[in-house]
Image (cartoon, rainbow, N blue to C red; front, side, top):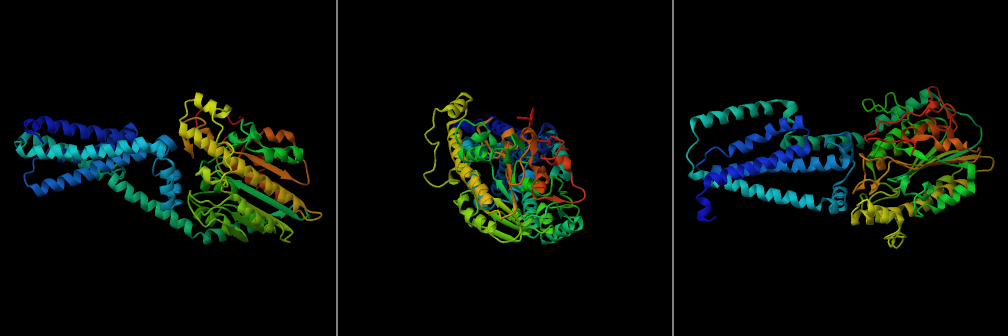
Length: 547
């Protein structure tokens, strides 16, 4: 440090402290609303005020530097993480959305997620690293020049102590104190661990669900043998399916089946998920939208448990490696086939590898069969959701879709992700269509069959903003496809124009299964004449469910 700089210690000290104060204020405001920001600001203030206190011994100055850097750095990182979650997911770190996602994510998946988001996060991460480095320099300036300063005046010391006393009261208040980053994040990790442990062993809840189903005593409305297939898509936005009018030919197989089957294949044109994540969406679907989170099994019915009680043999065939879904739903089935042995976004397990397992289930001689097929669909990373070399839209720069995205100001990397996503939908179309063809071909003589395809949630890939991935804050996060087929009756064409919500899909699937039990809500079955639409409460402004 030059002599000219050291001749101005007071200016340097106050400039450094001002920079630190602005950095802390910006971080707090990025992660909290105005009322909460004022409270959290008081939690950050002691670290700044300590830098004003004269300390002569070098060892204590080093301790103060380290403590101040850790505390101020924690607030900066906390603000960056909270700001990212609020911007992209409109969620706080301790919201059920984020806690469930973290509990259902391995360290490897977390690294893969950060890697996939690197183009969008690169500048923000660089800015954060730069700010942390600048923080270290500012603390050094604020503490090194203090050695030559006169001791604080008596009035200054009193004022400083008064402010510190106010800050101490903020730390004594538990509702305020819990937002301190050094307390919040360790508690957050404990919440995630507790949630993961709760998912890890749900045998007691599954037994209770079976008892609930037995008490409901579901019956069949037909004596015919029955085969029903439920295909669960993953991260499929209907806006990217040519079946729904998309400009790229992403679903030629489903369009061919629609033309072939006509009124026996129904496309619900206004289908919505009530959740933007897999775990919450499937929980709603299988529990008829009525699962009580505080009493997860005691008063709840589960579709698989009801089907088993009515005499169905149930298969769960999955391309996921997912603890939560496995424990909450799959383990209720009689036969569980999980073909994916490589968890995480980088899994190269293809949905087509499920088809042999699906065919084996359909060939089983059981008179009543329910086969649940859980696809990996179009889950990020999009480019891994199809065989190598099957990227039909890689060279569609400048087509109608790409031109529209360019006009909307979408970044080049988002437009590339859209090409990958559309290619994933194209491959997914082939697999979904094949599950229907297999269902048709394996119906026993004199038996009936039904098939339903619905996605858990949608995906934002440059539809309304520069983002590729899950999106609870935009309509794209909830716009899903829903199709159904049955062999024994034609569908009323008017049903296709009714708004449909995935957390009510269980009621419609119960009709396809020919199940009845006391307490059914026919008004939530989109195929029933008494169907009465109620819009789900989604965190998206100006949403029109008839689109």
